[in-house]
Image (cartoon, rainbow, N blue to C red; front, side, top):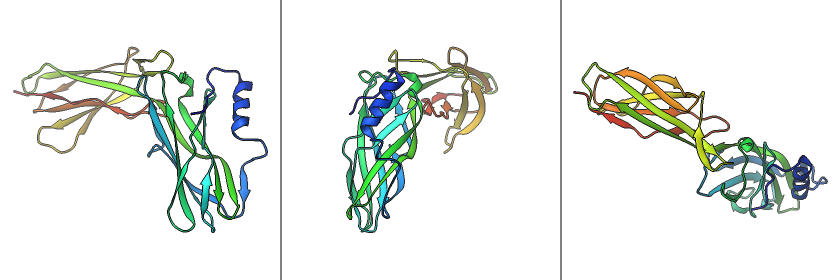
Length: 252
């Protein structure tokens, strides 16, 4: 993995970018080489926590009448002077004219000095070579969400509970702080409370609850039947979606 820019001065970030993509290689190319698809980590989302390293895969599909020869390392750039570069991609032939080239980069929050401002929308710059000497270079060929991982809990009480009585469902939403390498409260976020009746196949939405300044959740519902309660956070551009474990409540 190449060194990324952290809290460095803007001039340092620009210098690193210039090394990765010389000015002469402006967005463009020759002949009929085209990039048709870019996928990052399967769903264009990459959530990074505070401990375990994560390998992010980048797949670029390209086409040329002569076929695809190969690709240079893909460059990933984002806010906060975020910068990553994959290893040399390997290309797999789809058909006579089209190939998908895939590279990866390992990110370790414990050693890579990620800054929280780096979370958000990132872009992929890609260079693809064709067999007949044509090429395509495209800045921002694709985009993905570079997210801080999140954690969520649920607890419904009392257990067991009499039918018709009030249940209090609490929880807490936290997200990775890349600078402290700990999870911290995520305040002011809308989180959905869902319920699965025992024997049913799908959860239903009960209500939406907002997290407090401490990231805490608390609401009440009427106990109607045995079932499972859970909180679900949909995520956003900077924080990953997360679903809590389910808490089963026995209704007497």
